[in-house]
Length: 184
Ligand code: FES
Image 1 (tube, rainbow, N blue to C red):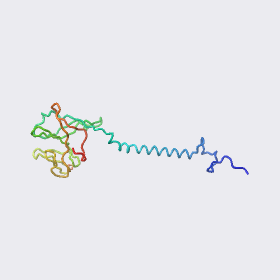
Image 2 (cartoon, protein in one colour):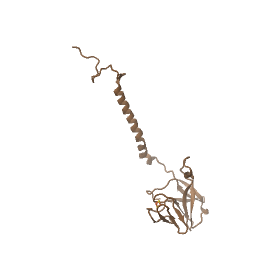
Image 3 (cartoon, rainbow, N blue to C red):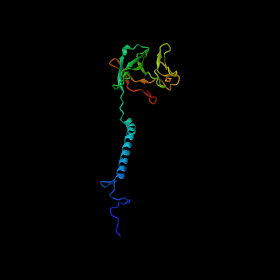
């Protein structure tokens, strides 16, 4: 009795249509599938890894921006001023060049500069000279002239920019909107 020749361990003849260069088609497809899954997994994981490390890589993009001659602001007034966003890209449009803020010039000549956005949900607040109050049109939030909260849903006062006078010009540290997690 003769032993069967040329038989693969799984019972399939070694010389079959699925064999190619010593590798079965099934084995090749299995490896291809594993490779594709590994590639897909890597591509899906990249944004998550980027998100996880973004806080370490992120640079503070804020810069000092001029609002105009300090002498040009009338003492005891609060007025709306636009500044150029220091963080802008070619497709920013007017949002890159016209960022409004409220400049309060106190009677002693010192300044407070407030973000225009309400601390509740970000609607633009408006200052009323008659009442010396900032009011939000969205849900009735009200702030005193010094930016502190007076009433309504805002959980805090208006966000305030850091200011300084440089070469006679009023400057603010701008470039990023604050959030409720930040103190200023
Ligand atoms: S957004 Fe101003 S009160 Fe809600």
